[in-house]
Amino acid sequence: NEVQFAASNKLKNTNYQNVYNDIANVIRENDEHDDYIGSGPVLLRLAWHASGQFDSKQEIKGGSYNGTLRFDKELSDPSNAGLKYAFDLLKPIYKKYNHQISHGDLFTLAGVVAVQEMGGPKIPWRYGRVDGDIETVPLNGRLPDANQNANYVRNFFHRLNFLEDKEIVALIGAHCVGKTHLKNSGFEGPWGAATNMFTNEFFRNLLTEKWVLEKNEAGNQQYNNDKGYMMLPTDMALVQDGSFKKIVEEFANDESSFFKVFSSAFNKLLENGIKFEKSSPVLYFKTLDEQDI
Ligand code: HEM
Ligand SMILES: N=C(N)c1ccncc1
Image (cartoon, rainbow, N blue to C red):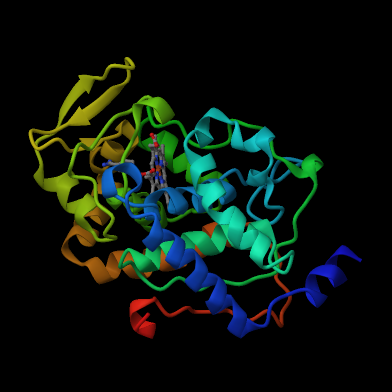
């Protein structure tokens, strides 16, 4: 009867634009977060981490369906350091809709809002995820390690059923927004250059900046340049591997190509492992600007 409960309590399609707008307003109201980078990047990371622990080979498969990132058991995974702030931003919205939206739908919708409100591509989205209980929480440690090379990155995303290099490169292009924080991940920077605009700049920087591998205060190796930008080892892997590098060059020269691949890959990430009802509509949302709000 859980499915009936979900079906009977689903918002009508039109109301999801209201939820979108509520999340977008939370981003606008919290623009001072992280030295005025704002809350878009951390909400985007929340949606990615709520979905990226998927592993179809495990008994507890993970993915966004059960909304398990709401449990401390998962939120306390060291990979999720810093995401409690993002979850706390969404709690009042969850309360407002009074169980008419699941945590899985809320977390993934927040990622769609973050990308679109930061000027990124439209992301198609479907509702219908149903909150699972604590037994559905996947084991910690399924999110990727930033200290690794191109083969690691490729194998990691193969686990998430991203078999094309284009999808993998596009998804990591989300590092065009936000920054790393030593206390969260043991990586620091960029300093000052972090953005909240979703563009192909990450790919242009990878190709044009001069990167120097240095040990940071946490003892981790990261790439720094003379403008205070930084790249993770897994970011740099995208120009160390021949096939990845060709795609970085394509996306650096053609932002619309990056946007097209990112849109479908991000949708796939948010829906990994979920069988939506045939009837469940694919929704597209207007930005606040498009609604003159
Ligand atoms: C090889 C795969 C990836 C690795 C190893 C990785 C690693 C990291 C690390 C270490 C941080 C810094 C966290 C902190 O210190 O606060 C970070 C931030 C971020 N990641 Fe990734 N990431 C990966 C893929 C992705 C993907 C697929 C997305 C989204 C589609 C994403 C979105 C973000 C965003 C938006 C931030 C900035 C968060 C903020 O500013 O608070 N990342 N990532
Ligand atoms: N390479 C970066 N500047 C980066 C930005 C955001 N998150 C991770 C890395």
